[in-house]
Image (tube, rainbow, N blue to C red; front, side):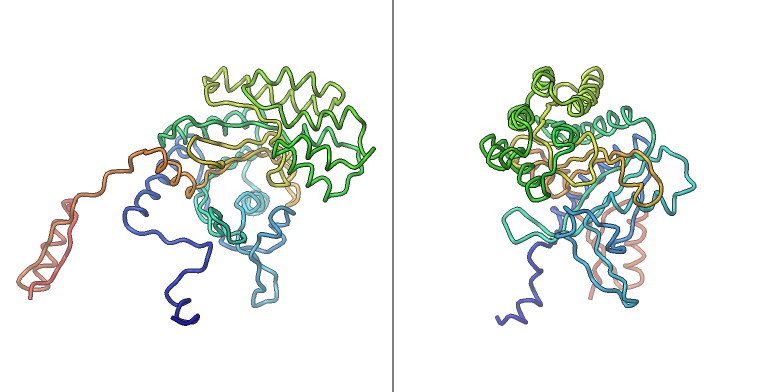
Length: 370
């Protein structure tokens, strides 16, 4: 088969196609997650598939964005992210709606990913955004919703790993590190590579106590009791300690609400999207070597669109959830009952019989009798 013929019958790398039982399983996952969102009084929003490219001006998203020139010469982009779109809509179309706003979405994003196993360019995300309102209450609410979604799906042994970008940012506040060095540091901290953190720091670039604290971030993970150790390790940096205190309050609230079992703290959670300003978290479970979702607080993003407002949100990846549930042996929804064959001595009467059975809720397969 030549190249042109191959392209006619094969989908491009990174995109997906689902059929029958596989599609039914994914729809079931989506319906159960959306049911949780609705149960917490979030309102569905269906944003556009593409928008002006500068809406997605995040440095983390820019290299992954599929952009194109519109007929009017505008630079447009397929959505690589829902949060930026919803922030724009909240500041524009919903400008007259008072805060707090609770919005949820379910749909596809498209991001360029180099061809690698387990990486897709077409991703189905289900998530929500809590815009405005008290930050502490909103943080606790979205974490409780994330936990309920995983419970409803039957995910076993899941963990919500909490971090705070203000810890890393506070340690480096006022330093003159270039963006490339900052990114290397984030990578090494997240990889829990203590030696790599030392190597990424230019000699004399930060005070010795700060360098020691950055290295300690690679080891500060575990149950919420680790926060006491973290407070001692970050004693030399008031800004980092303030972020740690915010995180401790969230963890305490969740424990009091009965969510302590699936809760951990991980201060090496420092990367994520660059619009995050506070709490960040990722959801993990056994049998999958990567997170199934995550989110965080982004209190400055809406100001870009002219409506400053605190906000927090999260998303769950449908593709990863389906894979996780399969690996954990969670039984899918039972298949529908077999269709009843309906035919008739003529096309019209046969079709009438089929319609009558459908009105009674019966699944049918219609065939004309020759």
